[in-house]
Image 1 (spheres, rainbow over the protein chains, first blue to last red):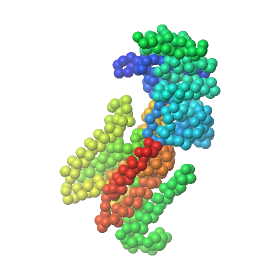
Image 2: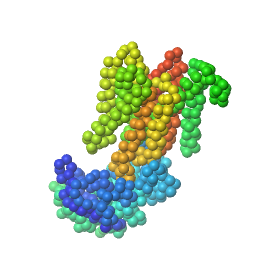
Image 3: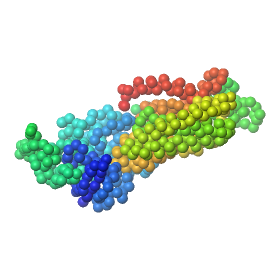
Image 4: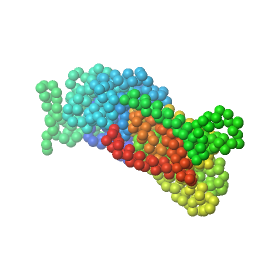
Length: 262
Length: 333
């Protein structure tokens, strides 16, 4: 098992956030984290990268206790794509992607020529090499997201975490980014843990033979976990989001959620 | 683009050298280049001469000190701006300058102008102020970066009021003028001893910050991202703070508070060379060094009496800063 979270307990401001949360991820699959706003999707990702501490439980990376790894060692195994970035200084796209090489640098060194090559390859994979001299802040939200994903790719880790990568994007960019995300699994054999607002993403990602699992938050743990059809259906959506819906199939394959008004 | 940057880099490297030579030539005592060559070639034959003492006892140490002080203030300003991901921060932010100011005032009052003790007190209190800011910063955990700035503001105002108290009780004829002059910042009345006092902490600070340059880039993305990219944020931030305060406390303790360099110089360098701190920090050192050495030439030769250099840097710094804000509004930020 690549990533194994078992029995996580965590409090925030005297309120329980997780009570015995468990989740597993295997190599080469996408696990989509679903749940209402404020249920702790981002916090869970923070726990996995070790940015926040949990009180009880265990997170294992390829079998090893994640708490025992140094920050640098962990960064070689897990990359993280933030929810959209507001950076102060005008770094270029190349510099942003190069920062993904940081866990491989000696502590006082700058990226080498080889690091540049790796970064450029990551940019090519995502089709953003034409922006390489541009200032990151001048890109559109969709392009920024691709740069951050390229940075995660340059980090050369087996696991990539994504925190709502499409939350600020319009439909076209949303589909574009999701398609590139699928490519990471299909071509680069990455394993992704992705928090998302949109249960429909699970169905979109499922298209094209990529192993996808859905993990639904309910009652301070992952209550429904497994294949999309098992975890995301009318009953679980009603329970988790308190929304009545129908799931219909379009052209006999792509499923989509139709929400009913009360 | 790359070629332009190379030319700019060469110019920035040349600036401190040119400033150093100008600082030897210009002043109220006339020293031509030929005379300087003669003096340097055979100093023994000029011993006892006025020109000898002007060059070796006054102008050379003062020029060196100007270079070191300007360079360290600019480099640590650059480091702190990156770490705090805030382009409006400078090395005074953590309370170093006001702490050192109070230390100097205390030294002047207690030891009646004993020079070495005043410097030592200024250095010690400068570092103490940073430590206090840091302690205040750890009280509330959720936003340590902001809290460290807030801690710096609190500690600065505490030491500023202590400085006022010191001025109030100081002897108005003897001690008060030295206090006021110290607080305004000046490179006057220094010799090789002061240069020797600060050369080690100054270089330790600049070299340390330059080596941390890439990590400062990553830190400037924010804590969560820096952590996810494998940077130990606590250790790295502590190192940045230590190197910045070490250098700043050292230079402030010999020449008082000199403003604007730490704020403005890194901005200029960032505009010219881009955002990589591995370049910003050493080039800020060079540009800050040249800038202060040039300003000091004006400070000592513009009028009959010596002008406080700290005042002049602000005079040049303020209009430039306003110009900069107008320019960069449409730029990459």
